[in-house]
Length: 265
Picture 1 (cartoon, rainbow, N blue to C red):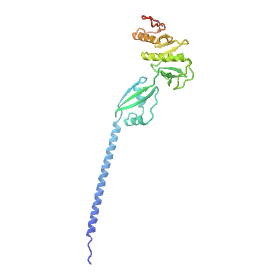
Picture 2 (picture 1 turned 45 degrees about the horizontal axis):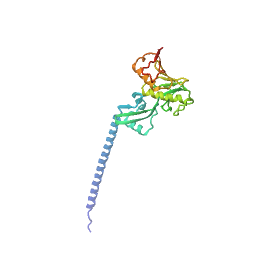
Picture 3 (picture 1 turned 90 degrees about the horizontal axis):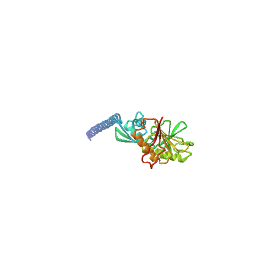
Picture 4 (picture 1 turned 45 degrees about the vertical axis):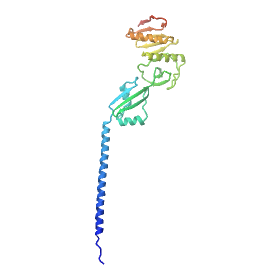
């Protein structure tokens, strides 16, 4: 019997070898495509890393701090102005504690521009306590302790109080005086009159200190009218550059043509 030649086996062997080459070729192309995509992603990330820095910062709601001070306080780290890091820090990390700031928000208007919205604590006055200044709000709550005296916030003297605790009401002995102080500081704020100091004597009579001028207000009667008169006098500029004492304790709401004494120093 004649043996059959192994041509079929040879064709099968040759066919199998070509299929393996094609598989290796496809694998090489796939690897090249994946590598190209990865390189493109890395390149894109690198470009974004160097490009996406915050270049413009808008600040709103600030009174106690200037814009530059707010920016310096919030963006004080090496990467603080990088857009990605700033977003991460703002979304997932605890916010920074800033004196006299209740809260703040950082809003992205574009990858390179943010708006900082500041919510300041409502402060109407402060008292001196154990070498510190204790600031209180319109409800008499101590909201901040600081070694600095803020401009535009009156220093209140003449009160007697006990141990002061942060975030608790100011423990004054005479609640009536405290209520008058809160009322007076709010009226001054409404009329946009900035005083350096408010002093109360033992007769519950108030004195205002504005630079070199002392204003005698007397008791709390007709306090709104007295402050309106003070605003008119200050707006007129008659005594702004002088030093002395202005007596508004003689104010009479029924007098349509009042006269007040100003004694120069």
